Length: 399
Ligand code: PMP
Image (cartoon, rainbow, N blue to C red; front, top):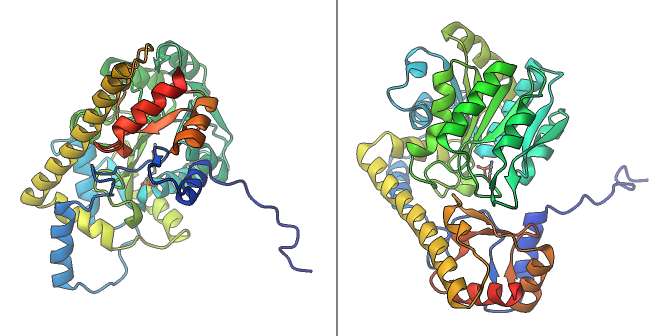
């Protein structure tokens, strides 16, 4: 018999499954609000001008495609560090940060998880309730038990900060706490600057291991303000991990460009930690791919291209904001009595709309509008052509 004869079908990824159903839907007015991707006003994934310029130069330079260092090139890792920690960072000056290029934010989480599993084999990992749907599976696959800490509060559509803090305050020393650094996925509800300082103090008091996930830097208020959590932990003197991604901010989803950064207590520790991280990488995929990282490094290390990129990123941020205010206004204009103004306060690409699973289902069956059954919608999939249709449909299903 075949060795695969008894293999069971794995469950479909809920969000990728949604894409398949969407693709198969024949209605021309259909709208996919389920994805976690930024689309422009024409409903297309943009290729940024800064990226195009850097790609053209790279094509003309026709570099050979030798292997990269296991941790990726210094030009890329240094650029990542400057974005996360700031160019004037004392941690960087003191050699306290180890960075390795990774296969997107997911790849960064994975090499971080594998490394922590070797460092702290008995640790439990805590993620927000709810969290990005891959966090649990990824840390479980790395061998950890995974539990939730309270986060979203449906009543206020904000963060249950008292509940979150109380739970963190009960964790065993050495527990790993995964924190969304900004633009929380899926809720759009972020901590305030003051609350970040409180989280830092709980982590210090209880000896927790913070793991910041930064997948949307620049999508809330801008590169610098969105780094508030990183800066709060940087000032604390604690050791911590950061996974970061350029999938969204550079619109380079398929190129898989991200990084893992680890803050240590000093230069000597950094050298030893990097040597161990390199073992993890070497036994996973040996070394990272060239193209995406080279493009990001070229943009970030050129004053002119960097400015071009920041302007384009600002354009994406502004367009999402316009869709947030537009949706709220149009729902009001459609006669919806319920207050949706919270949509404007949420940050990043997503909104937890409060729509029930049944309402999401009727959006799909009656209108061809696809959203996640939790009520999460992607604001970056709205545009000037479909927003009116979506507002009308939501008004129908909430009546
Ligand atoms: N973390 C969070 C919170 C995310 O939302 C995402 C992407 N949707 C990732 C990590 C993974 O990013 P990437 O696509 O770069 O692997």
